[in-house]
Length: 535
Image (cartoon, rainbow, N blue to C red; front, side):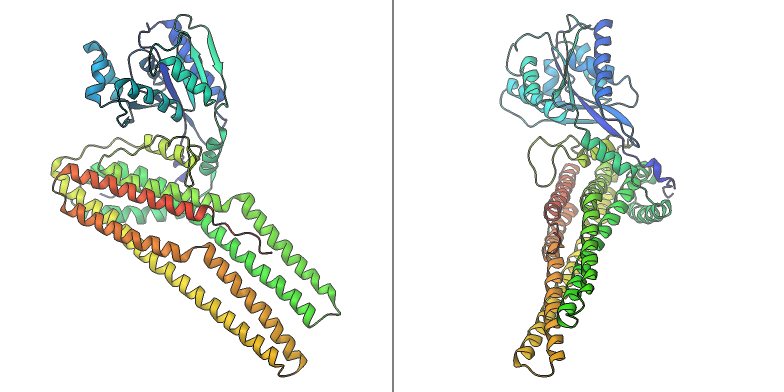
């Protein structure tokens, strides 16, 4: 049975999520007054969040689920049925629960943990106190706003609430702190507030119009491909259908938008060089053939104005930025399909706040992917009897498909690089020939003018073709794809030989990391390779 998709692409909206971090004391007594205070803090965060036109806003509480503050805030946020819980732990679960004094506390932890959309265990950092300190700092780094249930007193030890609050203040995080002993008094320290740019960029993505017929056609093609591969791997359709329906719809939409803006950007770039070449041709013609008619130079002015207008429109509408952002998101979503099929969690929390040539925590695609992943449908766990089927599906539908794609891409880019190089050399050769004939001074004055004209135009055309070839980085992209073929072939061979489920899952994670690093590398190359106005 094949998955069915809605023709209405408006259902493919990715919600924006406000990440609420939590810190506070463990020995807090729950009370109606404290619950009201926490709710007031949550509403303050809602009011502070940007207003969006096409994008629903959801709350994502990031909590370690320790006793006291962590659980109190998590429960209050989860009263909103649209909210999600992400859990981050300083230690492995079996070690972490040793800090809970009673069986009832451990049971409460497990109940909340079962509601989490994602659970992440931080790498080991020295002593237990150091692990808790790193946890608190991590929560601040990842959140949009921090709720602290704190009595205002200095920290009692390493990683205490006061230390985490001070770290939040230092980094200008929106901080709302409540004294559990007087919960009616809520202190709001706005810092830099919630950065509206990622929310607005996601809203812009959700507002992009797409052709429903094109979406339907692409969905059918993708659905047919993955359904055939699943049937060939003997995987039951009822397990995969919800994942296919949800993820493929979002992938197709992001892919269509990425291709649209790539084509717009490339056409703009080509038009700029063609018009600039025509402007040079007009100027050369007037100087060489019609020196007594300077009015012709008006055409050159018009052409150069057109160049500036097209270039300015491309910059203003951000065709280049939208292309690489949408492509980055599309490729992350595509990899997520396979991670979901094998029930591996994707690291959805935002990267630390640091400078990055690829992307940073302020980039909207990171939040968009996290929100997309958090909204995925729950999937029935595949039994051990499906191990061989899952392995075949991953090897063929993902890795082999990407091997074919990169092999084709490598060859296509190399052909384009080679073709444009030959054209440039041919034009430069013709320029040299025209210059030599001109130097020899053979023929009439008109012929000499034509030769000069050809030398100017042909050499300029060669330079423009070389500039396009360089900006599109055909050779480097060809080599990158060729290397990816080698890496993926090795991964596939290792995966085929995997004899146990743990080794298989480790190789799936390695494949996802390889895809991500390739995507990051591509983004770095293209992000800063922007042509300027030819002048």
